[in-house]
Length: 101
Length: 101
DNA sequence: CTTATATTTGCATATTTGCACAAATATGTC
DNA sequence: GACATATTTGTGCAAATATGCAAATATAAG
Image (cartoon, rainbow over all chains, first blue to last red; front, side):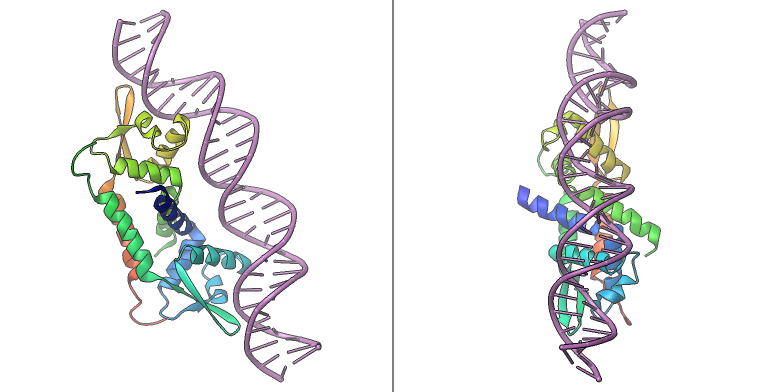
């Protein structure tokens, strides 16, 4: 595993590893349709500016996608991609080294 | 997902989401036999006390196990458990809600 | 008991992070 | 254009975090 990939993965995990951000992800997880930030605001204990910043972090890490719809911006969870990256890590962790060391 | 479980999961992800700690995990990942801290020291850019602290965090989150062997303490990765928790999250994230919202 | 090695802990410091509030920006409606 | 709503950004602050160094502790070997 090269350093750059490791850093990327660490960033993903760090983004998910904050309670309010993880709450946002769970919330989006339960939504069939994309949600706007005001709506998402209700599921965690921070104000709109805080939610905005959290969503920005999630967006930068490719965890959520956003699309402006008029006045609102609708966020949706990149389910497949995130799940895939988590499973890849799980596979790496679980795979015992074949030979040695 | 109740709040307590979410917090636990966030803690796991946060523990893994720091570059040097993730490097330690990768290092342990490639080891068949448990490693002591001095050995692990080489894989990341912090001194022994830093490694000690990182290993403590990983240990508290159940990511690694430790066992004293004489003068050394040998650390090993809890492969199955960590992989399982990551896959559980992946499953939650990937599963689209059946009915609504 | 002294010495050597491995690990942890106390302390100080620098950096990062999460947050609220206010101001700025973007967009839609009248 | 004036106003309302949604979101972002600037700022400051308090708390958390990562780190190195030195001292303390644990264990083994002599």
